[in-house]
Structure formats: structure tokens, C-alpha cells
Image (cartoon, rainbow, N blue to C red; front, side):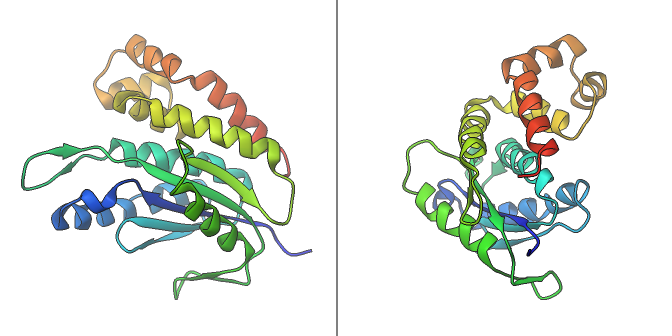
Length: 215
């Protein structure tokens, strides 16, 4: 049986509204996410496409949902300060594709196979959908229940405030509330309030189920 990989295909919402300067900053910022991803899966790698889209390979499927949520929080935390001094917080659509890969060539930046086809095709569909910003697809296995779970988690992160996303991002990294409070210059009860408001307990249970089951 061929190894099952997870791939991420993602694109920034309304990226065409960015100035040329902000587009360059966005590309640099997106590339800064890849070391974060590798901290959970050492063989994972990614590339920025067209300056506003991301494609990643995650050999350990169990880590793919956490990495997708981290990416959504990471992008929502970005502030792009253009020449007009207008700060814009961006959102991102992310699709996790599960399946085999014919080519996984980090050195030459080549990804080819069912997993990336699955995530890429579904991302094209999301571009015209209403409100879905995180999805899970596979043409080789039944992921129906997990797909619905991703829909809900995507909605939660999309609706979260910038500060809630900051707290969630660090919680997803495995940091304690006291560590987060110190890092963000907040009181621990304030961090706890943000964690509760974003539904961290429920997100944690969902991640635990996804990461412990062989889907």
C-alpha cells in the first residue's frame, strides 16, 4: 500500500487588494511559517506560489490539522503596513489533501500526486464558496466526519479576534498560559479569557482525536 501523505493548498483572501510592497512582505512572511511547520514534522516542507499561495507536504498525516490551524492563525496575525499606512489583516483558505504522492522532491520544489491534486482542486472550489475556509479531502479514503470537523474549526478561527488568534497560535505550539502571558505582555487570567472565548478546550479535544486516530 502506498504511503499516505497530507498536503496543504492555501491562498490568501483578497490578495489582489495588496500593494506590490505588501505582496513582497506577504511572501516573506509566509516563508517564515515553514520552520514552525517543521518543528512538528521534521520532513515537512513548503513553497510559496505566486506570492500569495502556499503548498506544503506533511508526511505525518496526524500533524496536518494542527499545522493547518497554525497557518490560519499565523496569517490572521499578520499586519501588512503599506505606503498608505493602512494596516490590513488577511485571512487564508486552507485545504488538507490526503493521498499518495508520486513525487515529493523538496530539493527541486516538485510535488505531484493524488494528495496535492485533492487539495488543489478543493481549494479552487473554496474560492467560490460561502464561508468555508478550512477543508479536508481525499479521493482514496472516507474522511467525511473529519471534513465536517475542519469546516467548523475553520469557521471558529475565521471569527476569532486578532488577540484570540495570537493566544490560540501559541496554545497550538504547546505553550502554557503563563508562557503565553509573558510572551504577549498579558496577565494570565486575560490569556485564559481569550482561550475560553476561542473555544480552546473543544479545539484541543478535536485535535487529540484527529492526532490519535489512523485516518
